[in-house]
Length: 126
Image (cartoon, rainbow, N blue to C red):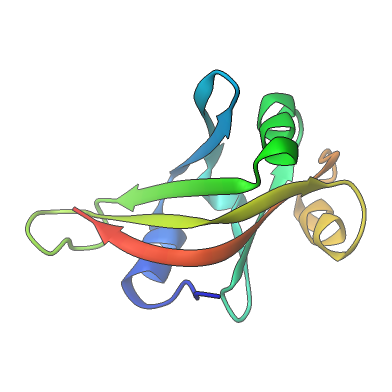
């Protein structure tokens, strides 16, 4: 299992928006979430988001649990240009009870559950 650390951790902490990609019967499905809603659970191997709707994403993950996240920020210097991006790949699921739901409901009491991403790889972009 990979960890979100170093420059990718900086990007995740600074991003305003996160793109979420799952695969369904009709191909890739994109969803998004606010970067400030993303929680990296220590030691950095799990990412958690509050879930309100996300029914399409949830259905995709039930059939194919592969997921990718893309975060980027101009606040973090890139290797060749202003800004840095980070792609996080792993497996995901939407859960409606347990420790991760408790974690997201501390700040987001409206959440019906949590999107839990277990990190398999992390790579910089840009």
